[in-house]
Amino acid sequence: MNDIRPKIEIFKPFGQAFELTNKILFQPFDLKKWLVIGFAAFLSGHLAGIGPNFPSPFGNFESHRSTQNIIPSHLEQWKPWLVVAVVGLGLLFLAFVIVLTWLKARGNFIFTDCIVRNRAAIAEPWREYRKEGNSYFLFLLAIMFAAMLLAGLILASAFGLGWLKQSAWETGSTAFIGLIVFLFVVWSLIVILVSIATYFMVPVMYRKRCGPVQAFRDVALLIMHHAGSFFLFCLFGIVLMVAALMIGAIVTCATCCLAALPYVGTVILLPVFVCLRAFTLGFLRQFGPDYDVWTSVMPPEFVPILSNALPASPSIPPAPNLPSEPPPPGV
Image 1 (tube, rainbow, N blue to C red):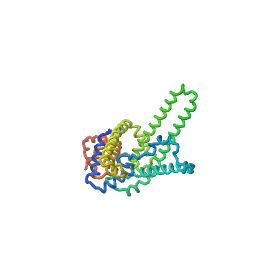
Image 2 (cartoon, rainbow, N blue to C red):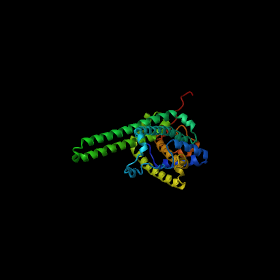
Image 3 (cartoon, one colour):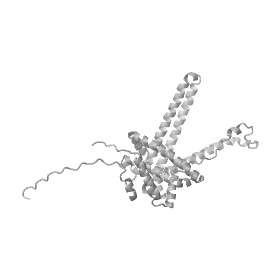
Image 4 (cartoon, rainbow, N blue to C red):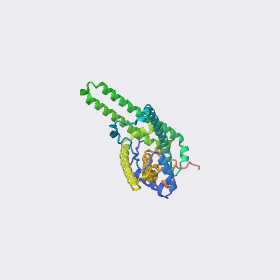
């Protein structure tokens, strides 16, 4: 049997995602549904329209650095506790990041379920996809620490090589800089590839109800076999992200920074987030039923939109009309 590769498109899934967004959020318009799906999008990491710009305490650090009395005299006795305070704040920040990562991992499945089934639900998908969400969180945590460890090894190698070449810096500076650039490029490519793979893992785990390792392997093989299609998806995705940032900035200015508030901005810009997620699901389902999140569950109102999304199966020619055999004698 001939191996027929599916025709992967970019603009058609985006058009279908636009229609799905219109169907989910505007036909009919339901404020309660907006608020619930907006909370699901909020849990999945869409915190606001644009990232809020918090004032930094380090803005005037250089101006105060030249002064003699940075710390008042009556606070000198607390200087030994400064290291303890810094370590404690660092641990609190790390715990905060871990909790946010866990909520994002669980929220991704909830937000995906809201779009797939066209429903506003939090508790049901939270319970139904608890196993997948928790395993996806542990996988993200392992990836995060592995990336930090790899970056640390690269920096340690760079400093070690720099210390060894310190005596011969004039002759080895070019090679040293080239090695640093090469290591940085390799690390960046690894991070980008892993990020793309983890981005598509949630639909695969949602569809197959599998673990993160199997989902990562399936997505990695899919990217290897269809590198050109995923490259075009990333390019178009960059354009969509720039457009989304511009829309977020415009809406934030138009609402007097109201859209910059967590959850409030998510609800205001919910059509953008739903369209982007539906575009990802529509692009991935072109690779076959194993990657189609609507295979087993498809709302009736989605059928006219998604009926022609998958590539058509190769047609089987009809059997030739053979002359019927004469009946046996005596019948």
